[in-house]
Length: 492
Image (cartoon, rainbow, N blue to C red; front, side):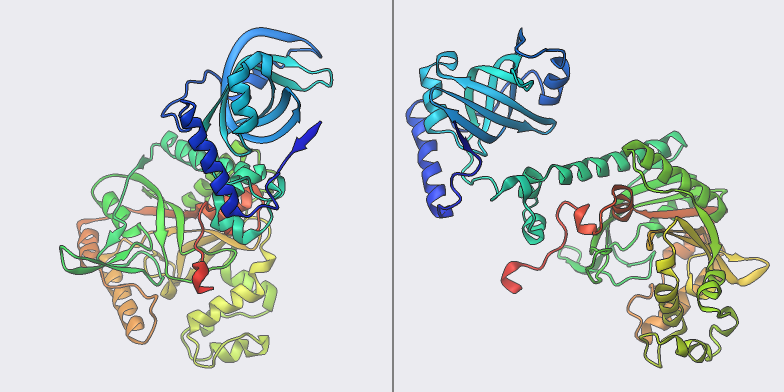
């Protein structure tokens, strides 16, 4: 018996393409369309496996089924062959015999079909003497002639560059990759369903915006020819969603793409998916409760084994715990750098206090935050859209959630004082003039909306890609984005 996994590995791709094109042409000459517009099947492979699981060794079923999928392997034995075909639900062995499918069909099978072709097979189920559930083919046809062979050693494609650039090969070759993306879909579905159950309405806000607001980030710029104006790819939907709450839509959420012109690493991709929501008559404590509920719901949906015992801790308490420093009194005094210089941080002497504080937290605290931790109460001066604590105005009612040393979400009690929001926007404008290209612009219409009245509101943004990373236990954001950003090969 000859087993064929990849017979063309020593042949150049140009030769393979030519050979397979000739085979497609030969099918046409035989009056067979190598690319039919439609094929009728009555079962997916997973359904077949479940339905006929009862069959014992060497037992056959009389019922006929029709399935389709990609041919992944083939073992020839003269006038009979075993092949494995795979669809989106699973894989099954098929037994193809000349006297069963007919001489013409078997000739096409033997001489024209190749690994990676899509085929349609009709027949009855039986279990072999070794216990393998198999389909005995009564009908065999090629429904898509593949010109390119399966990836080299398709059962274990490992080269990460190839996997990310040609995700279709990755999905063919690595079933565990396909499983991660199925879980991604389930996570999003679970979050959406839970929010709808809680009375939230899903909405859509502009991706092309005249002002890049709602977060501190560098935007991508584009140009609208008809209007003759520059526009920005949105960095966050926040300011539009809060306008909807002003308009009386008290529970809204959006799941969609944001775009930030930033670096690429294991935690960052310039195009990413966020779930952002706003709830009237709620604050950041309610958002912490809701975050726990949403993440636990998603984890349960996919059976994630990740530890989800959440704790809450204040930002400056964590900094003191891991550095021994009490930093809050030194913010914006000109003395913060002197307080932290012994920590040997990679900082220029003219670094802003916000940059210094971020660096202390990132280098000395974050890696300790392995269990889910709500880091609460950030400096108000660095949180331009956040409500301050009435009794402690230097602190904002804001939290970020960290799991496995990675930020998963950002949330706060929304600033709804239009006068204070004006001041915050003006501070951001001044910061941009001083060289902070991530500072937010002044949004006059948003101020008008706040002057119309925004009720007490809690807001929450969860990074979907990072959440999927955590719940599926993968190490890079590129493993959970179908087509991550990559430098073109010609420029590498």
